[in-house]
Every structure is written in C-alpha cells, then in structure tokens.
Length: 356
Image 1 (cartoon, helix red, strand yellow):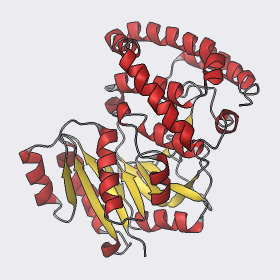
Image 2: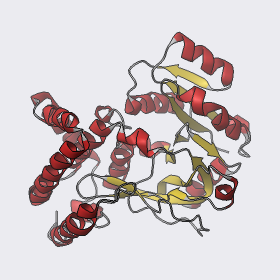
Image 3: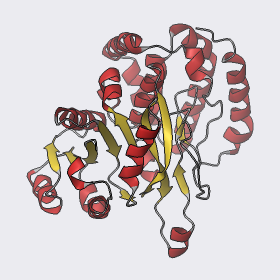
C-alpha cells in the first residue's frame, strides 16, 4: 500500500459549514486508515479556527496560513505531504461527501494506468432531495479548456451513468477531487500562486499537458459536491484575470498573435457585459493588473519556467480545446446564437494553422 496525502483547504467559515460531513465520509473510507493522512490548510487562520479544527478533526494535520491564497495554500499542503513521504497527493474540496470506495478507486486508477499521472473522481452534484439521491446529476467528468482561457465542466447536470474503464480526460481535471503522482508534482512545480484562486486547476492541467502527461477519469471514485455557482460568480475578478494569465503564460507568442482578433472581440463583449451586469469596476481592476509592469515581469518569468518542462507543441495541446463558450448556468441568446458560432468557426480555422 502507498501512503496518500489528502489536502483540504479551510477558508473562514468553510470548516463549520462543510467539514463535519466531509470528515465523516473520510472516516468511512475502505482504504486502510494507516496509509492516508489528511492535511487541512487553515487558509484564513485565527486562534478560533485552529482550535475548532483541532477539536472537530484531531486526526488531521492542521497547517495555519493567513492570507487566503488558495493556490499557495495547496502548495503548502503539497510540500508537507511530499515531505512526509506520500507517493501521491489528493487535492479535494471540503464541501464534499466521499463514497466509501472513493480513495481506493482513485489509487486504483493510477495503479491500473501507469502512463497516467493524475486521475479525477466522478463528481456528482450533491442531492437536495430523496429523489435526487436516487437519480443524481453530474457535476464533472473532467473539464474542458476553451481557447480563450475559459474552463468548463464536462457532463454538467447530465444524468449520472455507468462509465466503463478509465477514459482519458483530454482537457484538465477539476480541483474538486484529483489525485496526482509525486513525480508529476515534482516535475511541474505545483501551483502558480499568482492565480490566488480560480483557474488553479486550469494551470495544473495545462502544465501536465505541456509536460506530456496523461490524465484519466476514475468513474468508480465518486464524490458528491455541494457546488454553488453564486460562490464562483462573486470571484469574477480572479476568474476573468486568470483566464488571461493562462493564455499569456502558456501559449507561444505566434499563437497569441493568431488569437488576438478573438481575444479583442471577446474582451469588447466582456466590457459590454460588465456594464450591463454591474461589474464594470471589476473589469477595470483586471485591466489595471495588466497595465502594471510588475505583472508582465511575473508572466515572463513563468513563461521561462514553463519552457523548461514543455515537451508538447501548442498544436498538440490545443486540438481538444473548445471553440464554444459554455457558461452552463447562463442562457444568453447573444452568446448562444451569435458569439459562439463566430468564435467556434474562428477557432476551427485558426487551430489548423498552428504547427509550432
């Protein structure tokens, strides 16, 4: 048996809201207890939160931090788990309930697929009624890259279904529940802390693809996720800023030049949308970030670091990128009937010209 580290991030009142059920489902895991260790990164730490975590989950190792940076919190957890000799590390959300075989099946996915360095659980939406428990809906069967830096879940709100084998995830694994081999983490260097929160899983997934690694779905490793779209919307600044960071850091310069017309067109649409929806000041903050020379110095440093691990070309990586924006909680006719067909056509043409 290999030792596995499980990293949970607490932020403010998350532990009080979500940890009891998450902890109880970890107690029930059929993976031998002596072979996994839970690390809770207390990411907005206080005397009160540390005391609470120690009382409610004494078996967990609590790591206090103060600034709320989710990416940095995961890096602290990864460093501790690897230092403790863990052969693989699971990144998991606290607002979850794991089925009894969740961890066993995640580990089995890696053991069965030696060419894969990461495996994602089947993530289901946490049911709110008895009927939904009998017929749950899917949250994620793996996530999809969009060529303009967006990320979307695959299978969202579809009926749960049996999936055989270990299908390859051609996009990236959601950070809700993913296991990562030690050697892959040591190769890619963990999370980019500049992202702070959101798109952190895009960053990790793109790094893995860049380094030539394979990601699979572990469909018998099931987790129920208390997903709340409104929580994500409140973090629009990071969602919008970080999709630009992803493009500017990962794409080669010729790819960025090819995509400039689409980038500008999408940005104009986002400015218009921000005025209509009342988050124009947020959009200004994003612009302000990219007007600072210090931001571009960080981007250039990251590009040099990524060049060191790159074994795949942009052409190879982007073949499975989507040309359609799939805001699954937003039914916008302009996006659906005008913007998506145009952007998708543009992408289908452009990606055929990328040979580098």
